[in-house]
Length: 412
Image 1 (cartoon, one colour):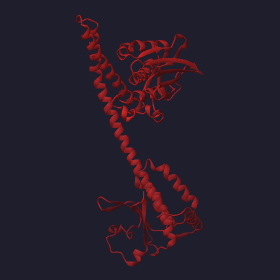
Image 2: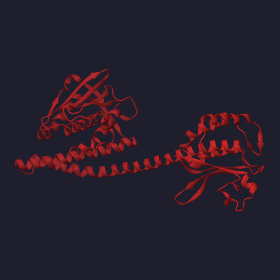
Image 3: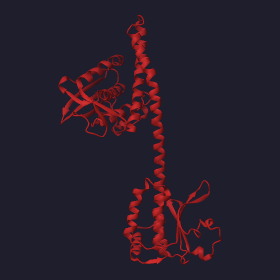
Image 4: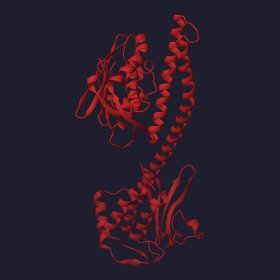
């Protein structure tokens, strides 16, 4: 049932005028009490079952009509039946609840019962019904209007409860997925470490001399293993971040040394792609309080992203500067750029680039999401500026003194 705002005001004013006890233990309450009950309902819904959430509506219906009994019935269209999900008082004569008494209803009993539909998204989902067995009186227009308002409210409660149920089930599935990722990631780390370690031994000549072709093949094996190991690390971090289990081990970190190590590590890969890497971070930038390994991970993910989207003969530049108690680091590339509509989405988990580019630039869609969360765990922020066809500038800022709270930290 639908009512205009003017109709609702008129009906609620009529409720205010009624203050005396009418029959039994049912009484009329002023509008302020009804408003408070409605206001409390939204905050109470989350931790309560549907029946408990509907109980205030049922009790209010018994007070305002007044009635000796009230019930909420929900339809199950697939089973072609209805169920009383919340009821109070004498339900024997309510339409749809007659099986409770097991006795045929008289004409007067039918007249002293009233049920109105509850509607959600334009469809009837059930009924809110009342009965007055004290006076066995028929209900009039005023009672119908009041019950109509409460039926609308009950419909909203059911709708919110269903949304809560969907959210709870989705959260449960996410927890299962996180647990699965954690187990699988741990199981993959040991064999990957072995592959990387023994590849280094072979490439170092400790098992015999290698031809140039063999060395190149082993280099590709190691590169693939390292990339897979990075993916496993991202999966583990997503698991930890989702559970709030990430710990930062803070120490004084020289930024020029961190960037220098990464530049040396990426040199073999860049030589194969013909992409130039320029390091503009020098000693004068100084040090900050941070987790060195996590900081390297952020830069590693940004560099991998830049390499993936930069064409051969392109350039990637790492630079940095101090600003207002923070340090800003930038990874800039001359790649394909990011459309404006996608610049916020690139930091979302599992986000992939535009469909037309997916086949050319594959990836897990985790690197930038993990980088963002690690930066924020340090109390910093990350953003991107980009021009399609000219490249992107990924920048992140970190407080020089380290994070102030919100994540578990430990000083070394």
